[in-house]
Length: 431
Image 1 (cartoon, rainbow, N blue to C red):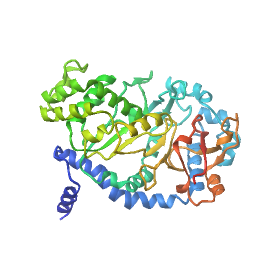
Image 2 (cartoon, rainbow, N blue to C red):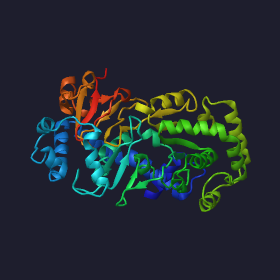
Image 3 (cartoon, rainbow, N blue to C red):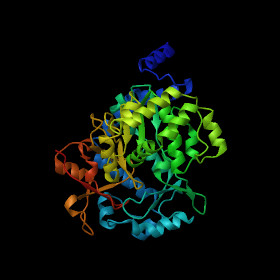
Image 4 (cartoon, rainbow, N blue to C red):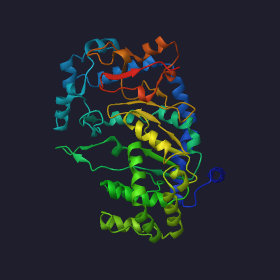
């Protein structure tokens, strides 16, 4: 009986013809079941309960971090070993910038232990350098674990309509080659860490072994363009997504030739074993190649929707340094699709999820129990050397609302410059 119910539910979600049994089951379990069932039964229940406990959760998070790391070199030097409350912490520890931590971070990278955390880092996250030079942050397994909780499941449930289809999903990621510290720790951007492809991705897992941008774009394009029943693009970076469509317009003749022949051009700089692996998955498709060529030649406006008529949702970063490219995509290549951003954060910390019913809303809900103790600075005080900071519960009380769920910010108004343990976040009241 259970099997019959599952099969009926799958059929109701219009599976794409190109699905195999493995890709269909993977997509169904990861998105449909997680968002509609687990998200409702567990995620929303826990999230609603925690939404009324902002002060308690922020205090507990800070207390846990300080207790866990009280014997580290940093905690002893900064006088944090005996710190027992949020108020004490904000009095003892000043608002800081990256340079304050750089010596300690360098020591961690060089193999020293018990410096910033009692736990050894799992990897070193590197920033993109959009606000200056590239910065590096040691990330422990505990850090990474915190973001995979009830709030993320509640977010999936809130936006379950996005996953209410078994048409195909494209996880668009461009990998950069990781470097390693002297002790063998991977040192790479968070986009790499989050770039693990799933079984249901229309682009084969071999893409994770291609590090140069041109061949990576080329392989992504071949497999994405070949699939006619694309419903959702998980694009991550709006800057890279915009670059992809510019790449498509420049190289569509060769791409269409390869789609027609079912073989990746030898001019694309990838190893022979990867090429052979990918070519086994391709089939000649002249009609699809002709269709794509015609759509590209029509022009850029609405190009994605014309290539993939079933395409409805595109997930890309739309705030901060990604804002300009996101706006250009909305007006050109992705016109006619729903563009949204699910979360807002950085290498330093995850700040919030998009929990509004309107998936296109750029309002994000602050999360008090995920990855950082948050100190809020009034927008007009951000340029002060040592501005007075306010904990999240005080901001809630000042706005006269109940529960952290109603405290949100519009990403373009967000200003980042400081890192944990003092996290600089400008907040303003939403109308």
